[in-house]
Length: 240
View 1 (cartoon, rainbow, N blue to C red):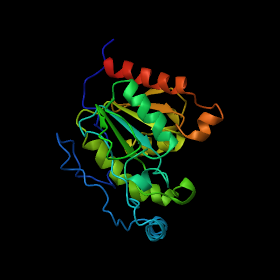
View 2 (view 1 turned 90 degrees about the vertical axis):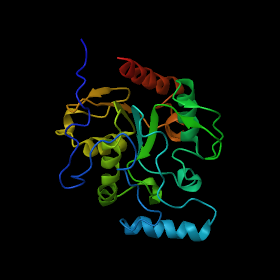
View 3 (view 1 turned 30 degrees about the horizontal axis):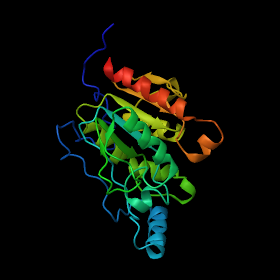
View 4 (view 1 turned 30 degrees about the vertical axis):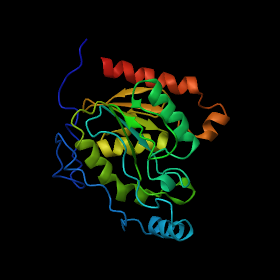
């Protein structure tokens, strides 16, 4: 049975957030947060603290990585303190990135050599990576109001991706925030389940995976083989 080819972004307009955002064939409509974004006082204070301690770190909202024309959007929770917050590129500088980028390379979603450095020349192919919260939070735990302040950026980014077909949520927190950004209700109809592919009412698909953190791999909750299975499922959905 063939899938409907209707616009997958239909229904993405949470009216209280960004009513004028529409899908366009370039990135002109997507405006990421400024380097000194003031929306979340707690995150601003945390950012200033680490700017004082580590002047050579990025210490700012972490921009998304990958082409706006990608069919796959990978959504993480927030930048890691010594990973993306330090390097300025999502999932770069910590173990989670080692597993994620090696997997992207294996499945043809990246080209080049990953060296955990934003200047390594790695390119993403048909894939983009973003975070639900763009600034690093204390203890890697964003507060509800911080999710709310940052959500319009994810809403706008999704609406600006003209070829988007699949979102991959890394962890339950990212899953919940992706559903909110997509304005999918009731969210309880689409529970977080590892390697589940949810077909959403707006024509997009939401894939779930346990987060590729060192903790999850050390405890056996997520293995490399399990992570690869998620991407096989995504490849099948994109091929269909």
